[in-house]
Amino acid sequence: MNSLKNKNILLCITGSIAAYKACELLRLLRKEGSNVQVMMSESAEKFIGVATLAALSNNEVLTTLFPNNPKGGMDHVKLSFELDAIIVAPATANILCKAANGVADEIVSTTLSICDVPILFAPAMNFRMWNNEGTINAVKILEKRKNIIVPPEEGQLASLHEGKGRFADINNIMNNIRKLFNENLILENKKILITAGPTREPIDPVRFITNHSSGKMGYALAKASKEYGSKVTLISGPVSIPIVPGVKIIDITTAEEMNNKIEDELTNNTFDYIFMAAAVADYKPIEFSDKKIKSNDKIQNLKLEKSIDIMADTISKHRGIKIAFALETENGQVNAINKMKAKKSDYIVLNYANESGAGFNEDTNHVYIFSKKGSSKEFRKNTKLRIAKKILEYIVNNEK
Image (cartoon, rainbow, N blue to C red; front, side, top):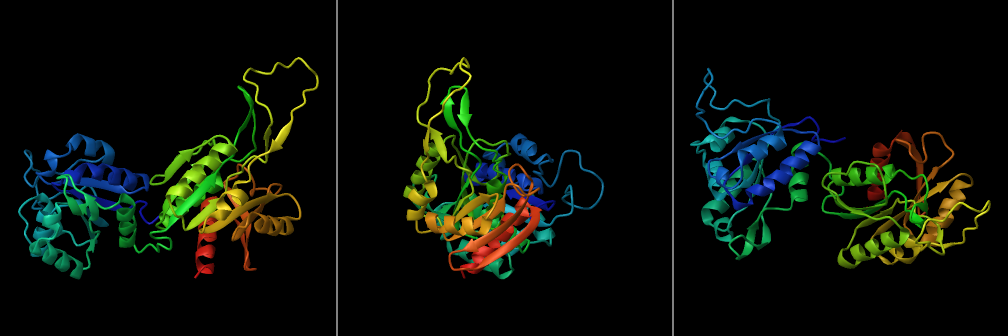
């Protein structure tokens, strides 16, 4: 379940040079289905425009306690909806100290003093300000009140100094926002590589060999992994599926391109889990014609050679937990277990191409998962997203 869907969130932006990064946070919250209203301090307006945030949120941006045409009533701040949470990002030392000490002298601090909902602060500031004794004490007070503080990160700051003060990674902030709503992040801080969709092996400039894979299962795994708190890289063949917000997507066409991109990722990163959900073409044409082959002959012979075995030759060398996929039409369990051994994978997920509602291009699936340790589990027909979550939960629990 997506804990952020239909949640009403107030995003408060204060005067840090990292204010522009709030746009990406706002975009992701909206993609997750949250209703977001933005509030800005006066100093925040020096760094980012109101029009941009109004367009991204599809809501009025609140900037002052005293508008030019005030409405009747005693409330200082009129919000569009009842709030479920407040996110202060970026949060300056100024707002941290005000919130900790009950100061209410402008729109953001006043709102924080009024609203009794979960609050998250994502600070960003000069490292000396973060290490200031007043800021340190303010953070302790706010944490004691059960507010969530997402600490800034080490790195080069806008001032070109090195130190702790950089706005936290957006994925880290999103995970902490999910915690506000008690979501169980079983993959928090894990890195996951997923492949999805078909490959296309060219015959000539207009023809290619491929299969019926839609990529829906791989994309469902990417969405579920992200919702469970992981940082996801998705290497995708040609598909017609909307991108998954917050997921790094790398597009490829051929099996060789997929293998090259996987090698690049494995060289530069260490992944905790690797899901080979793509339907990679088993064969490719030996020769490629750079001109369209004319249909003059009644019979056209096409010579094929075996494509690279990405799972066995590349992924098997990596230390992460490796999950292969098997699509069968008969003798499924025997074939899947043999494939798991041959590919040197830790798990294999089996489904049947000739089962209604469980193969290519379907929104649902019915799968069996086998581990090299001998355990297995059947997940009866359900949406691919729910099946993806069950697969992830099974593997995580099995690895404890």
